[in-house]
Image (cartoon, rainbow, N blue to C red):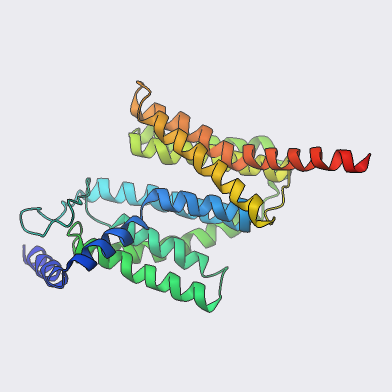
Length: 294
């Protein structure tokens, strides 16, 4: 009870600085911690910057989300009572409170990206987001301080554990064990889905299966080049965004069990980004090069 009282006191203090500008500012900042933002960011890394690093970030992010889901379901901590906090622009979050997924995700994603991108501008932007997104959760009144701190701590632990296990996995020559690799990429996530068959888990497991399998096959059979002229990069992301939007649209309208529907459609969307788009890019390059060779 005392901890909850202290939590409300801190939320009240953070919200005491409220004004119209900060309402819009923190509402916008918290959107940068949503899953949709990270999916687009990882797709951009994969298609336009560094595909191998993008695959690492993807698995770090997905494993972190699934860990967050398990912890929340085990602890079942309630969110702040809407009657006791200020509601900002009608924004509310659902589900359990501890740990904060936004805080965990922002530290895991941007913290890990700092191991690859070290320019001063990127570091400054990453640090700002790591600070501002957790603060936005308090300002919006959807998390207690303990949720935010717990999320940051678990995010840091996620990076450490992920780096350790990924180094072990990288030692295996998966190209020589394709059947085993595909069983690992598909069977493991499906087993998790059977244990936690919710609609939300279906989204992430479907993406994990589709994108993971697609990226593995792309590396084995295609080997597309991420770097390209700016118009080509814009075209890549436009196709990617349109396909992801189509998946979300279908997920909201196809009258099938939500968990199975999400699993299948997000798997298709993930595979399209991981393999389909790279395949189309390479095929178009070959088609253009053919007349020149003649």
